[in-house]
Amino acid sequence: MSLTLTVDGERWRRHLRATLDAEPALVPVCKGNGYGLTLGRLARRAAWLGVDTIAVGTYAELPELATRYGGRLLVLTPWRPFTPPLEESLRDRVIHTVSRPEDLAGLLAQQPGARYVLERMTSMRRHGLSARELWDLAPRTRGGSGGGRLEGVALHLPLQHGGHLAEATRLLNDVVGAGLGPTAERPFTVWVSHLTGGELASLRAAYPDFTIRPRTGTALWLGDRDALEVTSTVLDVHPVERGDDFGYRSRTVPKAGHLLIVSGGTAHGIGLESPTGDSSLRARAATLARGGLDAAGFVRSPFTIDGKQRLFAEPPHMQASMLFLPAGARVPEVGEQVGVRVRFTTTVVDRVVVS
Image 1 (tube, one colour):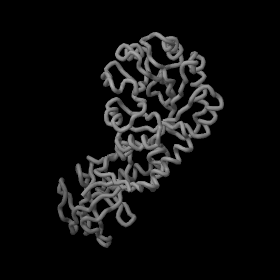
Image 2 (cartoon, rainbow, N blue to C red; image 1 turned 90 degrees about the vertical axis):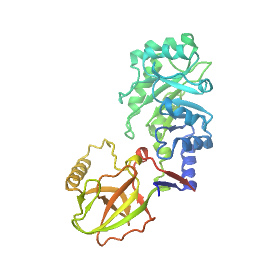
Image 3 (cartoon, rainbow, N blue to C red; image 1 turned 30 degrees about the horizontal axis):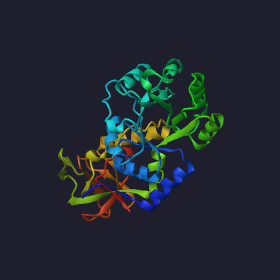
Image 4 (spheres, helix red, strand yellow; image 1 turned 120 degrees about the horizontal axis):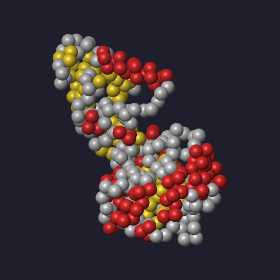
């Protein structure tokens, strides 16, 4: 009666361990819906892996993660003056991100001794300090200014694979030029996202005094997709003839077949699509094709029966979807499980079953 994510536990754990073995400095990213696996499960798995730090999306996610994982918590969302103060028990574990010059004084006024990283603006242009702001702020990180503990700098590069070595090198040159780096009292860490293994190796060779740590989410948790399977339960089956009314809006059936009611709807993220950013000709053609199907009343669903994606009979409901199965196709039994193709980062399942 639910939308279920089944995980081949042995295969998944083997992949996690192999990923960490290949990159021991890895920092697992645990945020949002937990990449479909839930935040709590990711926190426990990070503890099992033995990593000393995880990256957290927002301050609101801290309570759920901190009770299941005992290491350091690097918050990716930058600190702002309206950020609520941390609980006393979390203050020494949390590493804040500072992306504006004026926020460092505010953070240290709220929490003297706070641990923090300085985020440098990248070509992402989401959050970060300019080179001039980094240079101006650097002297304030050397003692005084509330006694905060600088843990390094953060670089959030674009998602494209490869091609970021030149940008990362330029940004780290700014860090060196600002006089930031390791001291006798403390190491200095560069927390990076979306660099290849080769790029990481090149940066480590060029900046041997820096500890370079990649923050990794999708490649870690979802790197072996064949270990993960999402299924839906067939809740009801109704034979229909051409012209029969059905659904919330009393549409008419275009031809004989069956209506299937299956678990999984908008509350789970089914039928909700986020932009992919793919601007290729093929992607644009697919968008036009989907638009034509929508206008005709036929929209391909993510539900798969006998290896074929079936059509939505109407837009999905909150917790269930209605599919149209044409005459001649095999009709599943009530209670049967059917496959669902989902985007894990936007899907909330009812159950996660790990073998």
